[in-house]
Image (cartoon, rainbow, N blue to C red; front, side, top):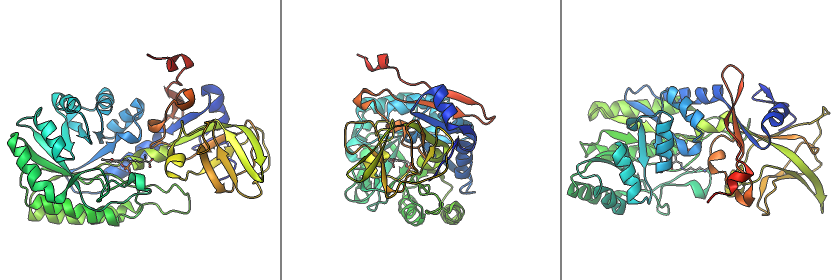
Length: 407
Ligand code: LLP
């Protein structure tokens, strides 16, 4: 946290704001490609595929880069499948992971030949009616979960996801009654781990189940790979150690059983660190001893701090050169939304700000724009990409006021 003029050490923050307006999501192509490559080489097990979990960020240009890097994708909705196909992913590189979806959504995927995972017996019947004779993947709830906040724990007794282990035989019977073959098992225990232990332990369940299910050709262990939002404090995930442990287990399993395709579904790891969100300081006040730095980034633009109390590193780019100084005591960085929960940072030191300074919020690429909304009738922000050659390209224009009037 400090004063910093450039985004990704490449482009002046104020230059970007002058040209493209504020607030603005800025992406760095080199970082995105780098993260894709790290995930692709996580293991050397030959039948290994990385499904980018596109819910983290579905900007079409970013999806194209991910496709160029050779990753596949998952989808949670027809909207995501639609965008992914437009970005050039053929149906066989897309996997639809449904949760409480309508039959029409399954039909959409079946028509396109997209592989589908269902996560309840009820949904299995809904799919069966429109996918007779087809293949299906079952999402298992492994009875344990993990994650950075209770709202993102997706396994365990209180999570709405997945089929309970004891119901898997019944699921196979239901699939059979529709002539469907269960050819895959998937799980996702939760989002954001920085120690691979729980993930490796959870892998065992799918491997054990697949031993007794010879038609299974795909195991998808899910996402959740974390990034260190607290720079210099949290450790980076040790991908080397994790990959080595996965390799050892997968090679042993396939030697004892059969070759099988293994998938993982990272969203955050791919997309978070390639973006800084820029905004502008609009007002500063001290009320009853608390300093409030107001800016134009509200939870309409980045909801993570308000929704999960998430921490993002924040730098300030001064609008005129000046020596570094901090507020005495903790200050609050807050947005323009008419709710007191509209807080980007609290109870931490903040650099002294002036109106017109730029705010730089780090690691905003995952669940940033994709969770943004036009709440308070504030148009969605623009997105730009710092391309590999250093040039900056607009990859989504700012929503206009006129576009808010849509019927
Ligand atoms: N696969 C499934 C089935 C998922 O539900 C998710 C995320 C992922 C993969 C990717 O998880 P990741 O690798 O990104 O952790 N909005 C929250 C995170 C919600 C995650 C929802 N599911 C946040 O901003 O922290």
